[in-house]
Image (spheres, helix red, strand yellow):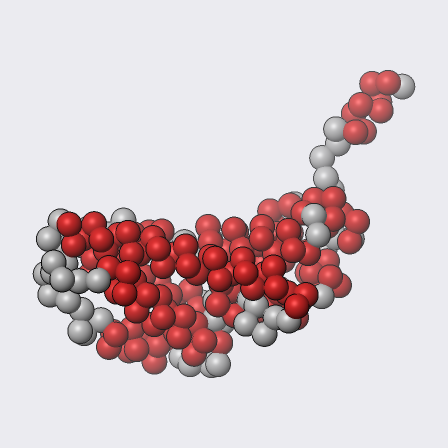
Length: 202
Protein backbone atom coordinates (compact mmCIF):
# COMPACT_ATOMS: atom_id res chain seq x y z
CA UNK A 1 0.00 0.00 0.00
CA UNK A 2 2.83 2.39 0.93
CA UNK A 3 4.62 1.63 -2.35
CA UNK A 4 1.44 2.24 -4.33
CA UNK A 5 0.88 5.59 -2.61
CA UNK A 6 4.44 6.74 -3.34
CA UNK A 7 4.02 5.82 -6.98
CA UNK A 8 0.81 7.84 -7.10
CA UNK A 9 2.47 10.90 -5.54
CA UNK A 10 5.35 10.71 -7.99
CA UNK A 11 3.15 10.18 -11.04
CA UNK A 12 3.87 12.71 -13.81
CA UNK A 13 1.28 15.30 -14.84
CA UNK A 14 -1.25 14.14 -17.39
CA UNK A 15 -0.34 16.90 -19.86
CA UNK A 16 2.65 18.28 -21.69
CA UNK A 17 3.69 21.35 -19.66
CA UNK A 18 5.85 22.68 -22.48
CA UNK A 19 3.03 22.51 -25.02
CA UNK A 20 0.59 24.04 -22.51
CA UNK A 21 2.97 26.94 -21.93
CA UNK A 22 3.38 27.35 -25.70
CA UNK A 23 -0.38 27.73 -26.07
CA UNK A 24 -0.57 30.18 -23.17
CA UNK A 25 2.19 32.25 -24.79
CA UNK A 26 0.16 32.44 -28.00
CA UNK A 27 -2.97 33.57 -26.14
CA UNK A 28 -1.06 36.34 -24.34
CA UNK A 29 0.65 37.28 -27.61
CA UNK A 30 -2.65 37.61 -29.45
CA UNK A 31 -4.87 39.05 -26.71
CA UNK A 32 -2.49 40.81 -24.32
CA UNK A 33 -2.31 40.26 -20.57
CA UNK A 34 -5.68 41.71 -19.60
CA UNK A 35 -7.44 40.50 -22.74
CA UNK A 36 -6.51 36.90 -21.98
CA UNK A 37 -9.07 35.47 -19.55
CA UNK A 38 -8.36 32.41 -17.44
CA UNK A 39 -10.94 30.55 -19.51
CA UNK A 40 -9.15 31.53 -22.74
CA UNK A 41 -5.87 30.35 -21.27
CA UNK A 42 -7.03 27.03 -19.83
CA UNK A 43 -9.07 26.20 -22.96
CA UNK A 44 -6.02 26.81 -25.16
CA UNK A 45 -3.77 24.89 -22.79
CA UNK A 46 -6.22 22.00 -22.59
CA UNK A 47 -6.12 21.87 -18.78
CA UNK A 48 -8.27 22.83 -15.80
CA UNK A 49 -7.68 25.92 -13.69
CA UNK A 50 -6.56 23.68 -10.85
CA UNK A 51 -3.91 22.10 -13.07
CA UNK A 52 -2.84 25.53 -14.33
CA UNK A 53 -2.37 26.89 -10.81
CA UNK A 54 -0.52 23.74 -9.72
CA UNK A 55 1.84 23.77 -12.71
CA UNK A 56 2.35 27.46 -13.40
CA UNK A 57 1.04 29.50 -10.46
CA UNK A 58 -1.37 32.39 -10.93
CA UNK A 59 -2.02 34.34 -14.14
CA UNK A 60 0.82 36.78 -13.46
CA UNK A 61 3.32 33.96 -12.94
CA UNK A 62 2.04 32.19 -16.05
CA UNK A 63 2.55 35.38 -18.02
CA UNK A 64 6.15 35.69 -16.83
CA UNK A 65 6.83 32.08 -17.84
CA UNK A 66 5.17 32.71 -21.21
CA UNK A 67 7.38 35.78 -21.71
CA UNK A 68 10.46 33.67 -20.97
CA UNK A 69 9.33 31.13 -23.56
CA UNK A 70 8.72 33.94 -26.05
CA UNK A 71 12.23 35.29 -25.42
CA UNK A 72 13.78 31.87 -25.99
CA UNK A 73 11.57 31.12 -29.01
CA UNK A 74 10.05 33.74 -31.36
CA UNK A 75 12.19 36.58 -29.94
CA UNK A 76 15.46 34.61 -29.86
CA UNK A 77 16.61 36.55 -32.94
CA UNK A 78 17.72 39.28 -30.50
CA UNK A 79 20.26 37.07 -28.75
CA UNK A 80 21.48 35.69 -32.08
CA UNK A 81 21.91 39.20 -33.48
CA UNK A 82 24.25 40.13 -30.62
CA UNK A 83 26.71 37.51 -31.82
CA UNK A 84 27.16 39.07 -35.27
CA UNK A 85 30.76 40.25 -35.89
CA UNK A 86 30.05 43.93 -36.61
CA UNK A 87 27.67 46.50 -35.16
CA UNK A 88 25.98 46.99 -38.52
CA UNK A 89 25.43 43.26 -38.89
CA UNK A 90 23.96 43.23 -35.38
CA UNK A 91 21.52 45.96 -36.40
CA UNK A 92 20.60 44.24 -39.67
CA UNK A 93 20.01 40.89 -37.95
CA UNK A 94 18.03 42.56 -35.16
CA UNK A 95 15.65 44.47 -37.44
CA UNK A 96 15.30 41.67 -39.97
CA UNK A 97 14.57 39.29 -37.11
CA UNK A 98 11.95 41.68 -35.80
CA UNK A 99 10.25 41.80 -39.20
CA UNK A 100 10.20 38.00 -39.50
CA UNK A 101 9.07 37.36 -35.91
CA UNK A 102 6.20 39.84 -36.02
CA UNK A 103 4.84 38.58 -39.36
CA UNK A 104 5.43 34.84 -38.94
CA UNK A 105 2.76 32.70 -40.69
CA UNK A 106 0.68 30.72 -38.24
CA UNK A 107 1.54 33.01 -35.30
CA UNK A 108 -0.10 36.14 -33.91
CA UNK A 109 1.17 39.32 -35.55
CA UNK A 110 3.17 41.91 -33.65
CA UNK A 111 5.32 41.34 -30.58
CA UNK A 112 4.25 39.96 -27.20
CA UNK A 113 6.87 42.18 -25.57
CA UNK A 114 5.38 45.33 -27.09
CA UNK A 115 1.62 44.77 -27.25
CA UNK A 116 1.25 42.43 -24.28
CA UNK A 117 0.20 45.17 -21.87
CA UNK A 118 -0.11 48.42 -23.81
CA UNK A 119 -3.73 48.80 -22.75
CA UNK A 120 -3.34 47.31 -19.29
CA UNK A 121 -5.10 48.99 -16.37
CA UNK A 122 -4.33 48.66 -12.68
CA UNK A 123 -4.86 44.89 -12.69
CA UNK A 124 -2.29 44.49 -15.43
CA UNK A 125 0.33 46.75 -13.86
CA UNK A 126 2.63 43.85 -12.98
CA UNK A 127 2.60 42.63 -16.57
CA UNK A 128 3.13 46.18 -17.85
CA UNK A 129 6.11 46.65 -15.54
CA UNK A 130 7.54 43.25 -16.51
CA UNK A 131 7.36 44.11 -20.20
CA UNK A 132 8.85 47.58 -19.69
CA UNK A 133 11.76 45.94 -17.87
CA UNK A 134 12.02 43.32 -20.64
CA UNK A 135 12.29 45.99 -23.35
CA UNK A 136 14.76 48.03 -21.28
CA UNK A 137 16.94 44.96 -20.71
CA UNK A 138 17.16 44.31 -24.44
CA UNK A 139 17.95 47.96 -25.11
CA UNK A 140 20.76 47.78 -22.54
CA UNK A 141 22.18 44.64 -24.17
CA UNK A 142 22.24 46.42 -27.52
CA UNK A 143 23.90 49.42 -25.88
CA UNK A 144 26.60 47.21 -24.37
CA UNK A 145 27.23 45.59 -27.75
CA UNK A 146 27.53 48.96 -29.49
CA UNK A 147 29.80 50.29 -26.73
CA UNK A 148 32.12 47.39 -27.45
CA UNK A 149 31.94 48.26 -31.15
CA UNK A 150 33.05 51.82 -30.36
CA UNK A 151 35.95 50.50 -28.25
CA UNK A 152 37.01 48.20 -31.08
CA UNK A 153 36.82 50.94 -33.71
CA UNK A 154 33.89 49.28 -35.47
CA UNK A 155 31.78 52.39 -34.77
CA UNK A 156 33.04 56.01 -34.86
CA UNK A 157 34.50 57.29 -31.59
CA UNK A 158 31.77 59.92 -31.21
CA UNK A 159 28.90 57.42 -31.45
CA UNK A 160 26.45 57.35 -28.52
CA UNK A 161 25.89 53.59 -28.06
CA UNK A 162 22.88 54.01 -25.76
CA UNK A 163 21.14 56.36 -28.20
CA UNK A 164 21.89 54.07 -31.12
CA UNK A 165 20.47 51.11 -29.19
CA UNK A 166 17.32 53.04 -28.28
CA UNK A 167 16.91 54.13 -31.90
CA UNK A 168 17.11 50.52 -33.07
CA UNK A 169 14.68 49.33 -30.38
CA UNK A 170 12.24 52.13 -31.24
CA UNK A 171 12.26 51.08 -34.90
CA UNK A 172 11.77 47.42 -33.92
CA UNK A 173 8.88 48.34 -31.60
CA UNK A 174 7.30 50.40 -34.38
CA UNK A 175 7.65 47.44 -36.75
CA UNK A 176 5.79 45.30 -34.21
CA UNK A 177 2.94 47.79 -33.88
CA UNK A 178 2.67 48.13 -37.65
CA UNK A 179 2.65 44.35 -38.06
CA UNK A 180 -0.17 44.04 -35.53
CA UNK A 181 -2.06 46.62 -37.59
CA UNK A 182 -1.81 44.52 -40.74
CA UNK A 183 1.35 45.81 -42.46
CA UNK A 184 2.92 43.20 -44.72
CA UNK A 185 6.32 41.61 -44.24
CA UNK A 186 7.50 43.21 -47.49
CA UNK A 187 6.49 46.71 -46.38
CA UNK A 188 8.09 46.28 -42.98
CA UNK A 189 11.30 44.93 -44.51
CA UNK A 190 11.51 48.13 -46.55
CA UNK A 191 11.12 50.11 -43.32
CA UNK A 192 13.95 48.13 -41.72
CA UNK A 193 16.17 48.67 -44.76
CA UNK A 194 15.47 52.42 -44.75
CA UNK A 195 16.24 52.70 -41.02
CA UNK A 196 19.73 51.32 -41.66
CA UNK A 197 20.66 53.57 -44.57
CA UNK A 198 22.02 56.23 -42.25
CA UNK A 199 24.06 53.78 -40.16
CA UNK A 200 27.26 55.38 -38.82
CA UNK A 201 30.23 54.53 -41.06
CA UNK A 202 33.10 52.65 -39.44
